[in-house]
Structure formats: structure tokens, C-alpha cells
Image (cartoon, rainbow, N blue to C red; front, side, top):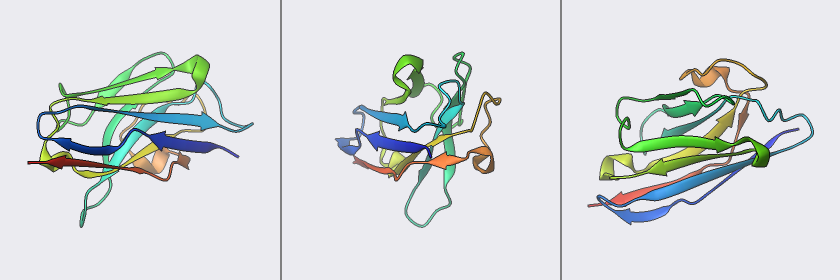
Length: 125
């Protein structure tokens, strides 16, 4: 099967930065799989943050556009989320997700087949 392991979460003051990483592994994982980040704040539904195809096509939620950058290293099967100008409203558990193959980028979480356990990001005011 496929395993996704997130790292890099933590506590940061408003205006600060964090970089999340997600390493994918497993025999059936495709290095060309579309990958994404989602988040779930306390008491809220999980929401889309960003996605990237193997060729580098990206899409962002309006709430993070211009502050967050998603990227990937296909050779390492790793996707990153650089988060700048963090706000208390960004506090959430951040989840890495992957599609099974070379499918288009999409913000629809139902299209993602594999999920990590999540990493906590807390923005303090």
C-alpha cells in the first residue's frame, strides 16, 4: 500500500513561517501522482489548501493564495507546503493526500485515495 508521512508542523507566531513535508512510500505509489494538502480546524470541516501535479501545475485555496507555496521533488516522492505570513486562522491539522496516478489537480478531497495522519500547525496571535 501507500504511506504518506507528514512532518514540519508546530507553533508559530502570527506572521511567521513553517514548511511542511510529506514523504510518500509504498510499492504502488506512482511518482507522478497528483498530491495535495488539506486542513481541518477545530469544529470545522476539512478543507482544500493546495494541490500540485507531477509536472508542477498548482492550484490554491483563495484563503492561502499568495502566502502558501506547494512544491514537490519527484525523485524523492516528497511534497512540500511553504507557509508564510501565518495567521491564527491557519491553525489546523494539515493532511497530505495523494491520488492514485497521473490525474488532474483537483480541490475535491473525494478524488484523493491516500491520506497521511496529519500534522498540527498552530498560529498564535
